[in-house]
Image (tube, rainbow, N blue to C red):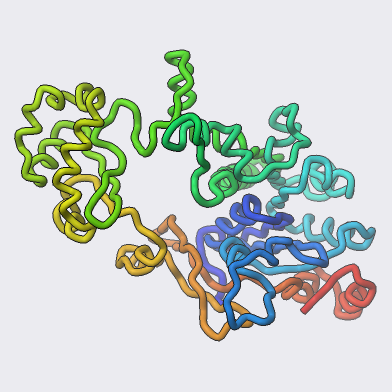
Amino acid sequence: MTPTTGALHGLRVLDLTHALAGPFCSQILADHGADVIKVEPLEGDFFRRMGPFRDDDQQRHFGGLFQSCNRNKRSIAINLKSADGQSLLKTLASQADALVENYRAGVMDKLGLGYERLREINPRLVYTSVRGFGDRSGGASPYMDWPAFDIVAQAMGGWMGVTGEDKDHPVKVGGGAGDTVSGLFAAFGTMAAIWNARSSGAGQYVDVAMTDSILALSELVVSTFSYRGVSPEPVGNGIPGLAPFGTIYVKDGVIAIAAPHDPQFKLLCQLIGQPELMDDPRFSKEALRWENHVALREAIECFTKTKTKAELKVLFGGKVPFSPIYNAAEIFADPHFSVREMLPLVEHPGSATPVCVPGIPVKLSGTPGQVRHRAPLLGEHSRAILAEVGLDATRIQALIDSGVVSAQ
């Protein structure tokens, strides 16, 4: 295991999360050096059983989704329904800077492990929860007890209402943005509270709702209704008021392009060999280009449909905002992601070859984050973690033998 480095070296975070939103939050902290201890039930985070799996992996300790949001962590498996297990968690919490959990509201309180109880043990503890509709601390939502997944957050938070070709065919953003966006906010909130605790000596509760997190990034929804009393509807890949801005067809597929402002538009017209478009009364001003965006798109496609994505990359690249719409194979082949270390390799137990995980997008010049090691096996570090908090080998073995703790 590579020695821990990074800006958060020295922080200890207990990770009582599962699925994606909570693990993504704690992984961000682990990437930047925090010692993140994933506290799992004896059967493990259910996300371990989610694929994809390598064909040669007969062990199946975990699949690709688990690997993607649990690297750089250590694992201890504890039966928190037992009195001894609850006592162990309290011991761990007494020596931690933060705890992150994403159980349904009230679950941790019923176990005697909620924030109010743990703050009695460790007043400096920052306690972060990530739930679909939040907890009482930030405002008791009428939906607080509702279960939620990514699609629920995207639907209620505003994204699906403005995403798609038209109002009758709303679509969610690809990937689990309802989870990862809330994970990002939770990581920020956790670190803001830790920073405050350094000077005040007091921890606090950090309450993050997945639905709130999506709404916070729904600037078009909020501003349009607040200023105009209008609920915006899906307009495909464009933004109302801006043209050309969106996707256009090319000889071998589709590209994204954005050249709505006068200098960009003039350059685009020159690049496609149609300088006359600059003086066309339909397109001579930014507002007019939006009013006539369908005709403008057709005019641009008269050129782009004769060119491949590769040819247009050479022509447009570095001149007007543009990108081919990449599939996974194209992402893996592009030198940008290689030089930016956005597809690092890690070991995968049970497979003969390493796998790629998403890299660290925040590049710190002095204390860079690092993908140090793969996701942990269930209970892989149970013995070491318990020894670090003061239990001797005899006591540790007794807890394992009694089924309170499991270890590799």
